[in-house]
Length: 255
Image (cartoon, rainbow, N blue to C red; front, side):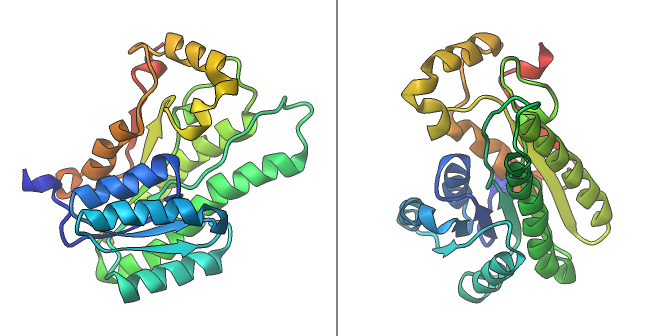
């Protein structure tokens, strides 16, 4: 099934030092792509782990430290990717943060920080990636949203996070339409509850039981289960898919 083969493709993955971003970077490499990993400087060790696993697959990989809320960091990352890895053809924007607070008590700085990373960061990442893809009329961009952009999670006080992920979904559709006749496809993936390090901490064990109870498939996703959707949307198999939000949630939004 060479429709899913990413050989010869070059991907820039933000948030590649841990969690979903790390697994997607490795997963795209398993499908044949070379990878530029981007994350905060404090995630350097995680990025090095990601790169080691990618190189073990025989693919090229580099690490790049920066902040997705800083346009200059992203433009430097794209330029270095093109210089050291090759012409950028895939962007996977997985950098994001989450926390919780009652809306009536939330400090505006907390609201602003979540939106800065989750929305501004995705926009700036897409912008930097598209600026090199558009002249070549070739590219696929995937933004990691959340089922929380479609529903409101019971018991979680995260108006800032939910609204930020809804914005990512609509931003992705907007960019898909703006660039639809210029060779770039833009889609989003909305994971449900996923077994990332954030959800594997002992202090959230009881909350995880509720997550699993409320999911029709009766469990959280593994990060491995997000690889297939990302490879699909990056590949020729999805050549007629743009402006799609692919929900990967074990059926959660059906309830």
